Image: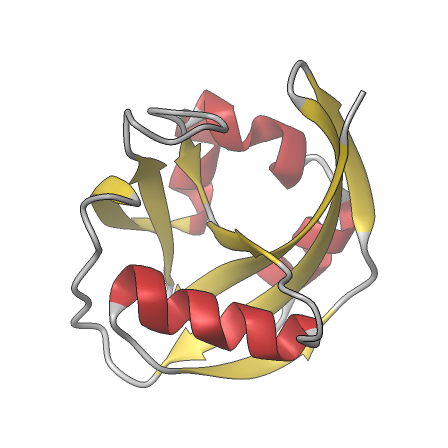
Length: 134
């Protein structure tokens, strides 16, 4: 089983969180809803990675509010070490790159559970801490 390390941005604006539907052409988790994430490119720090991913995937700049402990998720595609961040975008206007995400939505915290693809992440105490922050 392959192992991967990624960063994940729980993006908050007021009482809403940004989620994105991965493009059908993506190698991993096509057509699944996610928080913005990306592979760490050596020699980047996790903080540099998440800021790069925001720029590449959303055309946006963000401010890291909080970082919490990494956690692991295992699925059919591999073992994932996830480094999560709470991020605020400098603007709510985003321009999602279609090759990465076919759709984006701002949803209330109580609506996140309506997206089953997010469940493995929402169950993690590290993500719960970010959702409770601020």
